[in-house]
Amino acid sequence: MILPIVSYGSPVLRQKCEAISSNYENLDILLADMWETMYNASGVGLAAPQINKSIRLFIVDSSPFYDDDKKDSLKKVFINPEILTEDGEEWVFNEGCLSIPGVREDVVRKSNITIKYQNENFVTITEKFDGVNARVIQHEYDHINGILFTDKVSTLKKKMIKGKLNDVTKGITPTDYRIKHFK
Ligand code: NI
Image 1 (cartoon, rainbow, N blue to C red):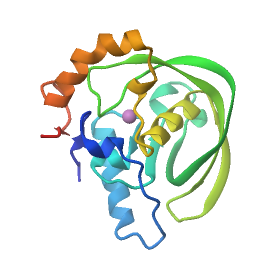
Image 2 (image 1 turned 180 degrees about the horizontal axis):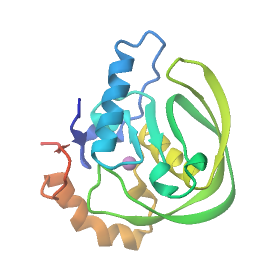
Image 3 (image 1 turned 135 degrees about the horizontal axis):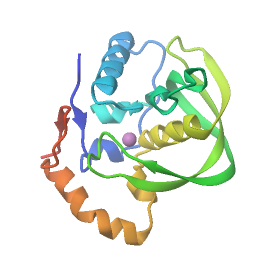
Image 4 (image 1 turned 60 degrees about the vertical axis):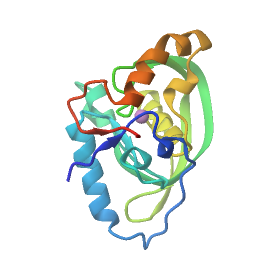
């Protein structure tokens, strides 16, 4: 089932989400709904707060960034993740967010991460990622801590996108997927 995506201005996007346990009810249905919702909106990642659930869970499928070489792309569920290290070069990547339609900005982040997480079977895994895969994970990881990519742009850029963010908050930015703005 496609779920509405919560948009900028909603308090759930600003909460530090709660960890979940292996007996979390109907997790398989939630994950299926999240995949469907993300693909329907042509996203490469979706965090639970974006579908109005304040839990430490996100999904990633970076394959649209790997046109020729899909084997380097990443499709995974991350539950209760913890980024252990972030290092390597700082690099700029133009980010967007399904909760912030109509806004794209360059964001600087480090290139390499080590992350510990549980998969959909609650098996604990520690893994390293780099490049675009790391980037998508970093963006989604921020979501479960109440952080949005627009927080990470310069003061000048923040001023420049203020009007667009107000439009998203009011729910007047057009999208080709279902969005739910905070009233
Ligand atoms: Ni996002």
